[in-house]
Length: 368
Image (cartoon, rainbow, N blue to C red):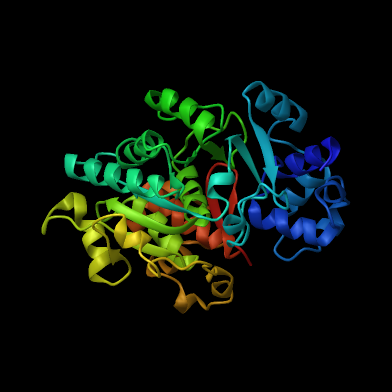
């Protein structure tokens, strides 16, 4: 891909309102990002369920930031853009539903080319959880498996550090721009991973770590992996959202059991109880022949045509709240008794399935 083509890819992704699904639609319709940018509004509006506001933004190149400026900043950071179709783009992620059209990357992605294993869990991890994350990550990395996680405090950070200590490969997926160290206390870990593994994001430089970004980040973690291990998680947590995405993509899910009645392990125990996850005590349970499918195939595209009755109850409840007037995300959170991360997860699923659309100011409406 030459420089001008790269600018077009980046430019289309930076247009306000263009997410992964809309990006793919535009490229299918016009043949390339460059042909979509600047196209007549009425031609763009021929796409199913296209908002006029987004069509106008694409036509007039209404960017979040100028693509040339993003590239210059990224180069100063020592990073690069990896676009769909590039040989470096992870194949498993490319075959997931609605993959990011491009990734901001620091470091080497080749270690996860054949799919890694995600280790995720609580930010407020117990000593037991931290020890299990350390053991699992070190043993998996020592066996040549890329350890994927989200660079959060607690379980994520323990997994990344253990993989590096074992001399293995690890990838951190950020929920903000690649130029932002989040959490700030992990800035040294991020720098080390950029040298010895990789740090990636699908968000533009300058994007803050707002809560609604993290379900998007979790979707990428699941897409990069053959399997996800939940080490420690309460009943409503980001780690369980990652496990749900893994299920959607037909990935293997494992969970470390915790003490009966322990709130910090209630999510893991529930995954095992419902046969969503296989019980894992050590890396041997994951590395054993046949424990992890060699070529997981995504299931999510088939779900696009599902009826409303087939949707999770939380998504059905959200749909019931939306009418002719846009509803703010805070109202949805209060009405559905969900936390912000769960709400963002379900709203993103509904957006990907083209049932709702996000409007400026975190307001949502039904797609007619």
